[in-house]
Amino acid sequence: MSVFKRLGLKQVINASGKMTALGASAVSEEVAQTLKEASQDYVDIDEIMELTGTVIAEVTGAEDGCPTSGAAAGIAISTAAVIAGKNLTHIERLPNSDGLKNQVIVQKGQQIHFGASIAQMISLGGGKVVEVGQANKVEAQHIEEAINENTAALMYIKSHHAIQKGMQPIETMIEIAKKHHIPFIIDAAAEEDFKLYIAMGADIVIYSGGKALEGPTSGFICGRKELMEACRKQYKGIGRPMKIGKEGMAGLIVALKQYADKATDVEGQLSRMKKLCNDLNGVSGLTCSVKQDEAGRDIYRATIEVDSKEAGMDAADLLHALESGNPAIFLRHHYVNIGILSVDPRPLLKGQEEIIAKTIKLVLAQGVE
Image (cartoon, rainbow, N blue to C red; front, side, top):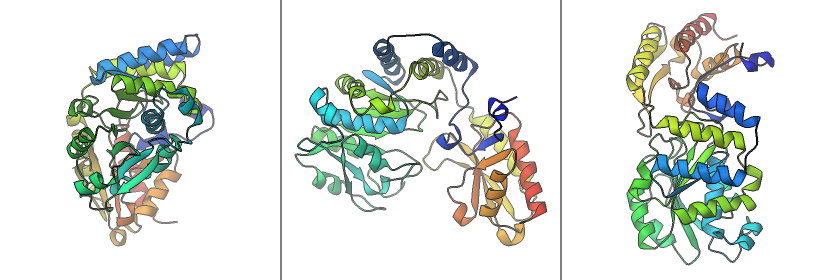
């Protein structure tokens, strides 16, 4: 029986994705055993933090790395690092960064809410956000004209939440950052290629440990050595209330070492989602098709379009009914307002796509209560 069921909680079928609100990922047996063993022993935290940084560097191709409690903490810590560096006096007064280079330039279409505000995470690290351009159009000139003597960094948010069109690409931002000798930070929380952005020339890249990596609740930063040393130093300041523990670091190390041998099962995703669509396409009011992730990642989801007149309920009603059941089924609902729900195959356990199809049919047969 699931530990959560033993605690009196409902079973959850996560078809939404590697979502923090649903616990992100289910870890492998080896990672789970590592978490257990680490929780029952002691270690020098500075020593394991440096070791974790070394493993992060090996996996990402960066000079060094820094473990964090999550990608959001990584944004705050990275911001603090480019502002305060390794200066302890500056570190201890953040987020008060008055008198320091503290402006972080972000394209307007990337000023998103991911469960919290990107701007707030930057602010926690002492950064003052400078939005450039418009929500659907940013020119390179907008970025250039925002740079001044107080600019601490340029930041790019790689996320499906962000506007995908009209923004300046990573390559342009790297070029501008290097031209002006300004650190370039990428929030790549959910990305699967841990080497890509370092190879492109980014100074700092932030990832989630609990998403594509399928590790424990954690995060990691990789990049230039002096900046990673500065990131680790922030645990004497704003990083302290968001510190990662011994269990998280030990589990992160194992997950990172496993990741090099892990291949994305694209064919498996496609097969499972095609079967789900075949099961649902005969249902009145539903049209199901397999589509690739909006941000271009190697993820293939079943997209369910709900015709409210034919189905007898709209997508929001269907979503609510699924989430209210037991098991509670959570679908991806970024476009529920226009009648679209999606099923993400990555977090699904074996056979759960069949439960989803049966439950959707049952809910539609029963209608709106």
